[in-house]
Length: 626
Picture 1 (cartoon, rainbow, N blue to C red):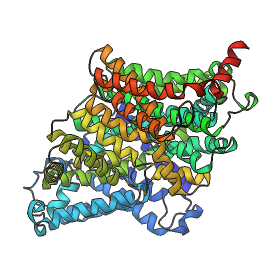
Picture 2 (tube, rainbow, N blue to C red):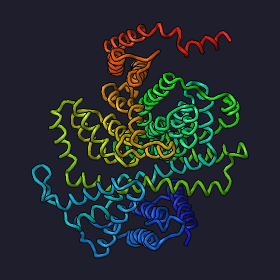
Picture 3 (cartoon, helix red, strand yellow):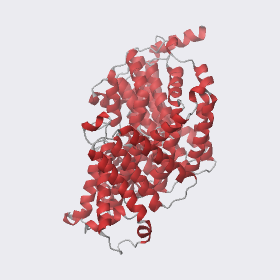
Picture 4 (tube, rainbow, N blue to C red):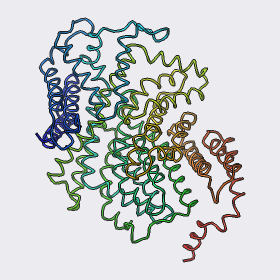
């Protein structure tokens, strides 16, 4: 039996089911969430082979059996819907079939997560399940009376708090419909438009292909739900061009990895984590997107500046005009493809629910696709979009189902409160020290996971610690989320970096170290908005504007300090001054801003004589004088 037809059938049926439940079919969550997981598991076992024998396009027996088991789980829930929805938790005893299907579902979810997002999350879930059973062996603070197998199965399978908890609830509603929107938009060729526009804007400048990678990845990240997918989509084009103008392979791969990771913190989609965050915090999705906008811009300002300084320092040129798309022609031809994104933002800002806004975005995408024949959504493209959305959703949904296991164990064993007490004790309650400890923990927890899995894990384990010491709810969640995302390019396990290194043909670890250097702003931006919430658009317009401007200058200063180049190469003293100038500019306050600007001014004055001979000035004068 061939793999592709089975994948196509399941993908199309799943997407139509999700469109129906989002649009007009009202279905109880006791049914919706298990059916969502059923489709997820079935498609994963059809897509990802058990062994090398299945990589030739044929389905092997273990995969067929696992897919059938997944379907049987959904059938069991549907057939016993009345019983499951009416039973009293912890009072009504479990039947033998309840235990059988509960254990089976847990095993299927762990295996599906292993095949899609890697072993880290599955191993972590197994550890947490073991803790919930054997915790009565644990000493001191980690002691818990433990749960029987029946109680574990009941929590995980027969309630909406375990596997079918909030993460799967968000995946089965908000996330899937936005995946469909992205899939429909991609079928119009919007990815090529983003790349063409990025190259048209930046391709001629020093290191133009690298700057284009930053711009293209930020644009593509607005609709992409995965850092690795972002790398694969834009990196196959940008990385070879970066290498062609003189960038070393490891640097080209690092640029793409860091730029693509930034797409996960870029509104409106934010790697789909914004929807989960809205459910966990009770803060509206729109407010989360607004709060995340300036930090995302600062991230890209710093990365763009790092790329520019590296290009100037090493004397790299841009591409010739005949190698680049024409900006005016590109905008005239394809700018209408922006309209669905504009529609999404408009509907969200007008008070529409995210689901309704995404549905309107899909309608807008289909409508604008008919402007030109090349972008028209034909029946074949629509079917491809339905299948692509299902494939993309498997990664998110599997991570959400597995993360639901973690989240429920943290809650019903009290493990979250215990970890909070330990972190506060170790840090002595000193907030900067605590933030550093939480940041390190988020980097470790995020290794090898996707965006959603990272966020749900750190939200369950780390965020309560920050809230306990008085950090407001949204900054606390965004702080943990940002550091979870940074793990995508931070060695030793850096999924986005590994994909980029594969395309670049570079050594993964060296690429990862370079990515950390380029993405240094990602380690600083979260501290910015913890101590200066004006960067989350909280405060008067003047406060927000001044905080943004000084922070942007600070990001440029930190880029110059790390890169060792401003107007010319910097010495050790100048790099130290630039570093402290950046920290002072990033920190809120008029005095710190003035001192930071003063230190920055000292460095620029010291380097001023080099300006006369700088390549930048010669080019500028040549353009002005014609």
